[in-house]
Length: 389
Image 1 (cartoon, rainbow, N blue to C red):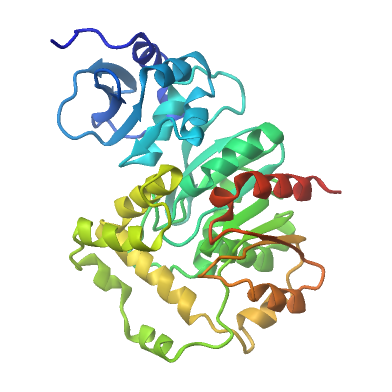
Image 2: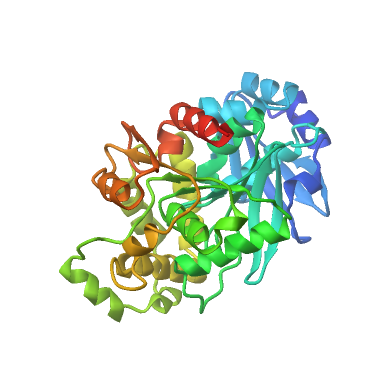
């Protein structure tokens, strides 16, 4: 027979819920399933700025799963939720943004610099952000199809090291605005990042970017070198030096078709899981969920296609080509490369050295997302680089 009272740890978490930290807008009711693998599941019902426990009902917006001991740890320690997630003892599925926002809002932390979610105003609309820490500001920019969730390990590792780390969802991705007619090229994204700097009143923040986010960070460095400090480029996407013949056909593809394209979830998820190692585990599984959550919306698909098209078609040479422009980059930069990266091969490091002889380089035995695959090595190197005089 089912009991009528939830675990004390779950009751503690819900009692501590802080809607300001969660950064959830709107008055709609949201259910977060708190699954107890060796006990009974409950729903945290978030509504009108408050939270309450309820027996499970319907499909939740996000599901957090852990055993009793882990839930007790999460309730007892302000960092317990993120530590359990990082250790693989807590899973967050369906909506990583909402799941981690719930953990942050129920942590009981009250100090300045605690993990918190917010919306940042830009000329294109509201961008979703998560941040933690105090000190020099670091803006983290995700890759194509990714979200700010890909930088949660960076937020967790660098915030205790004396940095204010702000991970954003670029326009078109995650929980940010998705304008339909936007170009979704590097300059468009760079303007959005510049607006974030202005909206938050940041003075020369560092930028960290992975894949597409690395290309965006480079664009900000080229456009507005006086507004930023240092750049960390994690497997940054770059213009192909020799374009394959099929790239020309992309000029004929209209990203707006993504608005009407049917996208069966099982088909798309099978494709994504097939190309992402470890797609059924931990951070990667949650990241696939985040990709699917945006891609299965018409505007999310259109943004994804447009951004992918712009990456593939960027001109390498000429007056406004990528490689001649790269030689003009002024901010000090650290490039991190994955030796197993199939998307941005290590061979690009040599071309970057030719263009930027003073740039630093770090080669790791990993793939395309170093901050998730090799977090300790990456974040230790990043902290050292950002602290240098």
